[in-house]
Length: 289
Image 1 (cartoon, rainbow, N blue to C red):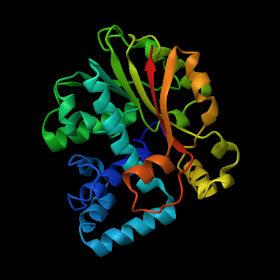
Image 2 (tube, rainbow, N blue to C red):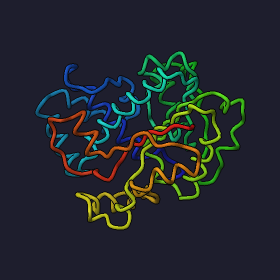
Image 3 (cartoon, rainbow, N blue to C red):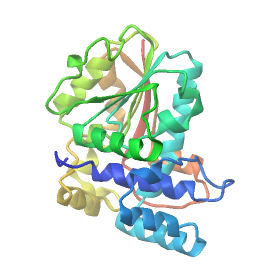
Image 4 (cartoon, one colour):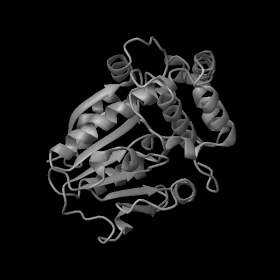
């Protein structure tokens, strides 16, 4: 990503969550009243207009044409990860670590996280932008959240002090929308770091099917997306073959529990939509034994 600006993809995810929040209460998958704070003036204007059904449908069509499948995949993925996270809290995790947090607002919008320490780790540009916007909108930073800055391609997570993250606690990691931007070495180092935590630690992470990197035309909208990512200087550099993920995690002492594609979680949470695109995006759920 560009080193002097917050991630463009973080902006898009905030926009998707803001648009979902504007849907009627009985039809939305979640409510994120904080997403609006992270939007550019243009995206704020679009979000405000989207309360009008005709405008909402128009915005949906424009996004589908620009990034096929990204909106519905991102919304369904958010709800799916929320539910996995709640499951781990019920199972007794004592610490939440969000790697590459972007404009994630789970620490604010999910009540069941307020009694737990939440550590957000991100690239300095995005982390600082997020804190500035939270201070402007809330007047303070949440007391149960700590913000740590690190460039995963250049710095090692092991450099984080024990005072920042306690490896002896059963922890849940959320690693959403990050691995596809890293080098294979950085991805392996991150899994090795997570594998050092207490037994019963959960990992919720996303990855892209490696095939989209070498044969983007195999997926609907794949070629267009890969080209646009290059233009934004946020190109994808890493993927995994789904049938090899279990074996890959085994090397780090981590067991795969679930692994679903956008097709699957989108059809589960948004059965009324027939969107195409983003079939290469996946959510995996694993545990440190």
